[in-house]
Length: 306
Image (tube, rainbow, N blue to C red; front, side):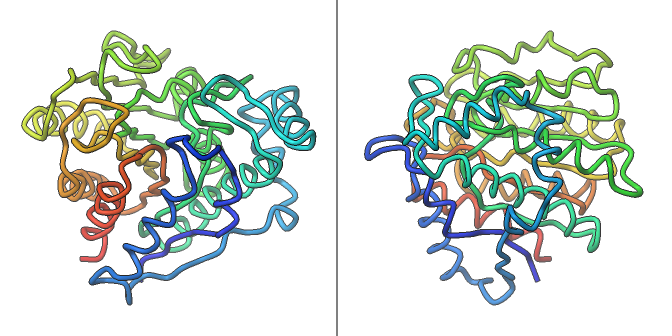
């Protein structure tokens, strides 16, 4: 059985009628999974309620300042506002963002108990969130928080984060690059938002691998990068657990970038990851064309069922 962590509460982060990062992203994926050929192999799991996880805030504080956490909380309590022009806060956004972090941490727990993959179907996303502010649709740095949490668990000494979202995860990299027990690898369009992710950035311990690709790149560009760069980097690091920032805005039909992947390409990406370890946490990041987003999540999960 393949666990998916999901709650309808994730729909309550209200970004506004025309915002790309909208609740319909999750409902499109859920509807597709409920009619997928492997739907009977899915185990749907609710995230642990925030009130039942007293250590949740301390886990977030390992990554974000108390001042920033309180800013999100206060903005939501005041009825909402904006962290920047792209990143709205609605009345329930703080609670939903906490629940999203809880879901990512639950995913770590499941992997440690089962040694098998899990998909966290949550929002808001997180890989652009910096230590002291959110940006780029992101509130809390879910992947980074999950990595530090994993390192606190028995038997986990090294964690790798692989980010295949079309945008560079500037927040994740900035948070983890000074920690030798965490590796970060990103394949992303360049130039593109947020303007970071140069190939020359290697982290404080050679623990960062950025692989920028030009607009128009397709699987013929990505596949050699995986085989010659990504897999050697991850294999040499020997992670005890792999976290995937699973963004799907590198699809050709996605309107927020210019990379030309197809949904089925993400099956190959998953196969590559499984060649490193089965201890994989897939967590949703971007992806804004609803049909290709849903198809890509299905393609990601399929190889895990073999």
